[in-house]
Image (tube, rainbow, N blue to C red; front, side, top):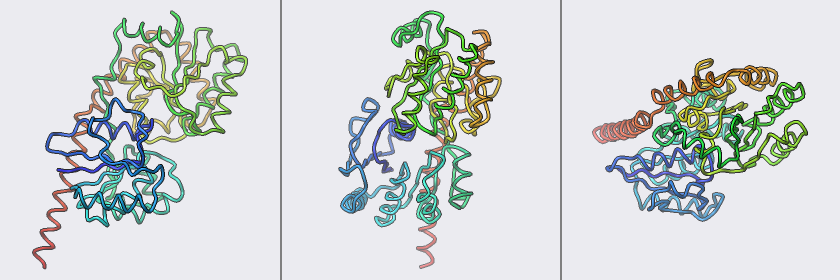
Length: 383
């Protein structure tokens, strides 16, 4: 079975990591073909040696690139085209239908879609066999705002490599903390994600600044900002707040980091106060590493964190609630954080194990191909 995966690039991001997880876990009877707009690859080590098979050679879709995509599809004749990200979803579905591909799947893995995508998705979703989303919130947005038919949508959560993302040994934690310059007794609060409006580092830093001004931010607290500057204006504000007198000695801007696991191992609490989310990989990974998490409701639509058990959930975009949750957590004993982290690990094992999630996706591939074959047979008998 030949599956053609289409995505603009493999820059740092959740969709990119998920497509790589799928590529690396397909059974032998599947032949994956990866096609990119352009060869921007952040995850080179995770990329199979024979991929990408095709690169269109442009950071944006052009007429020449689209014609080349159709030509490639006609030559390869895949059984399935599976597209990721907004623009690739649009062009990939169109090219696949022109090329006569039997099964076409688009993946929508974010919230707050661009207006042009929402306006086109009602029509474009009808050109796909299925729209796969990774969260309940994304499905609701497509149904309500883009008017996609519910039967066209299936929720398949992100797969999580629970063998790689695991709790560290004492030696591994000590090594990770030394690498990131954390002294004994310091507590590290980790933001893992691009610095942007969506991830809302700004609101959390303002909440921490308020605690510091009240002299309620313990001296042992260090804040790690791990992620690229995604929105220049927001990033400028984030760094400006981080440079305030009360926060500057505590906040460390690390930029984009490849070895995110070592940051989970070194840290004591994950912060994910997002204004909107699909299914945030960082929360899955951190909890699998036994790191408790403080998340917004928007980041927890799929109940990744069990409030009070594996972490804390706060109302979205309410800085006062975030501040008070931080105050309470920072006053809790270390044993409480460790208990929540351990419970988070068990929750990830039961809900997001890779075999379970990948099994859902492969079963979906098989079902759609079977349905297509049955429909083709019916049409053939009628003619």
